[in-house]
Length: 283
Image (cartoon, rainbow, N blue to C red; front, side, top):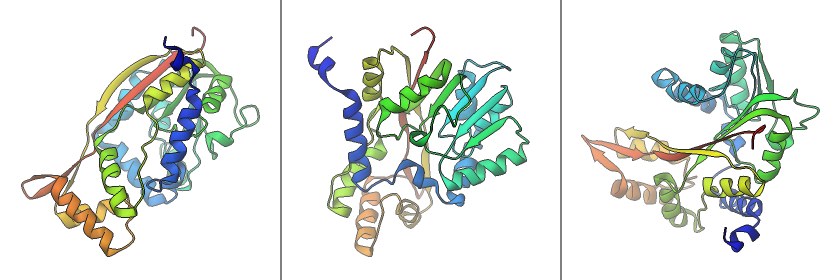
């Protein structure tokens, strides 16, 4: 392996890129996006589409049994934890966002899940000895790796894992990132930085002596708007619009860049994603 690669502190690379992403202003800290219950409820309803296809796909690849104890980090409204709880002995779910917690608690009551423990904290604030009841046969973090100190986050996962760890994250720049990088300077006069992606995550793991399995896949999704006005209305929060001038810039950009079909405007929200997993007992 190239010596320059070995000499790079990949954990610091992740931290630097994540902090630039957060400081650039185009995104709030991951957890704070879901403080409102209505936003969290929409996220839950979206997860129910196609008979929970994404959740079923994820669960079908987990190494679980009726006796398994599972830790779900960044559990959201229970998109994975609720259906997983039907197949295992116990699920511990970690979720910090107020809106997500409220919807999750509603779901626990509705689905009568008496084998789920909900811990209302950021993973970064967890005391693995006091807050958790390890060891866990399965640890999963599904698109919830917004921690600036990713090495510490993984070390804490390892501290409570007795079986497999599954991480889901993003692989490369997607169309959404491209829109932000092009539009954000026009709107706000500053650069937009994307999150660190799976290449850096893999390098962090490798540097920790972990040699995981990886599977890259595409999550196909399009957002369809009946008019340009609807597209601007729905996307204005994403781009943190503050005045009419910014709205005009976004409107002109969407008119020029969105695909048009039968009078509708189509926003390509597809993403390349990666599934990373390893057995802590055999790595």
